[in-house]
Amino acid sequence: MPDKLTPRSQDFNKWYNDLVVTSELADYAPVRGCMVVRPYGTALWENMQQALDKRFKATGHQNALFPSLIPMSFLEKEQHHVEGFSPELAVVTHGGGEKLEEPLVVRPTSETIIGYMMSQWIHSWRDLPVLLNQWCDVVRWELRTKLFIRTLNFYWQEGHTAHATSEEALEETMRMLDVYNDFAVSEAAVPVVPGRKSDSEKFAGAEASYSLEAMMGDKKALQTATSHFLGQNFAKAFDIKYLDKDNTLKHCWTTSWGLSTRFIGAVIMTHGDDKGLILPPRLAPIQVVMVPIYRNDAEHSKVMETCTRIKAMLQDDMRVKLDDRDELSPGFKFNDWELRGVPLRIEVGPKDVEKDQVVLARRDVPGKPGKSFVSQDDLANSVAEMLDTIQAEMYRRALKFRQDHTHEPRTYDEFKQVVEDSWAMAWWCGEKDCEAQIKEETKATTRNIPLEQPQGRGACIHCGKPAQAQAIFARAY
Image 1: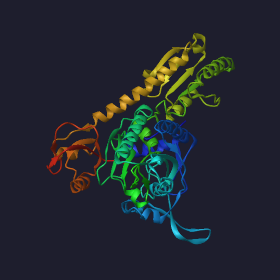
Image 2 (image 1 turned 60 degrees about the vertical axis):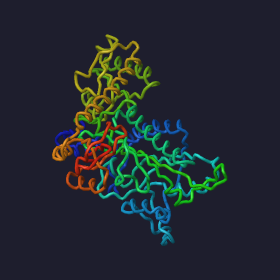
Image 3 (image 1 turned 90 degrees about the vertical axis):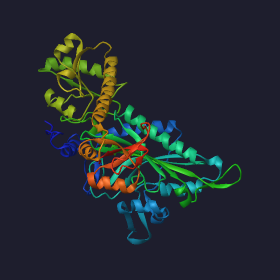
Image 4 (image 1 turned 120 degrees about the vertical axis):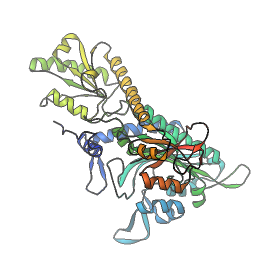
């Protein structure tokens, strides 16, 4: 029997940590702050990769691979970049038994080394745009870690592009934010808020950063993806130039954007419940699990024959698992697959064989309310429709949860109460000092300034100065 989870309402952090390990998504590595992503978690990440990679290639991007060791001098070329990342760097000083002439940084992100290579490859306006993406791992020396959410070593994709004009680079920045938004909503059923990061929260070395913010089940915010307009900062640092049509040598305009295995954490904390994971059908490693129910050899033979036939009927169009473990009871199997978040369970017993039917049990609606009897005739269409229904309902439920726990406080006292356990959408003057005071007094940060804004202007929730935009304030991971 799977270990009983700590209820989410009792200790959300313990529920999350125990669930990641018990459901076999990941485990703790022998190096502090690192994780091992197990086959089930890797299958989930691979499904995310495929959904994203398809979108990247549809927008003209190509995959490439760059080394994980970067000369320290590269990071030092862009002042804001090295200042932003210096506390998180892992540095190699020795190799082959000898001290290196120049320290090498284990990749925290690749703007610098890709910028250098772009300077070698780009010569003319004909070489632009350069649209690259890399699937890789990175190292950031985090002090406080949490499986998937924040680890020393994690997996992600990082896009890097170079353009002839600022307009093209800005268009790319927003296009990729839209790509991430479509992935989050369509594939992961995670409602997100796209918006611009404040200057104090933007990426080190960027002119402007944009993010997708999602509300987790404990009402904290999680940054799930970012897209950065780098201006010409890295182009000037690494001399990325091109000869324009007018025979003038100009610096390029660059972007970078990324989404990591942190998104697995987002799926867990957005959808999971006290029974375990609830995975969106489009990403779930196993979309349908079949559990045979029988009491003796005669029933076993008939039930398994039906299950084998049904699996053959479904497996070309969906990811199906037949749980034929004889040593385990159906009840154990039900709990096991509920823990692992398989979206739909098919139960087949002797009476179902006789009646030419099956029982469908939805993971997102536990117990009897989620069960229905369905004919085996045209079962493939019935299952496909049920999976679509589950996907849509998971998004609707998560969106309602966020809407129900996002408030627009009218006073700062009300604001302080709201951010203790919810999101606040509030007018903000945009000044760093005001932002820092809010963080110090409430532990809430500006998550982003949503692209969708109300008409008119307001007064800053903290200082009362004129404000041109509202920002999301929340406690966050």
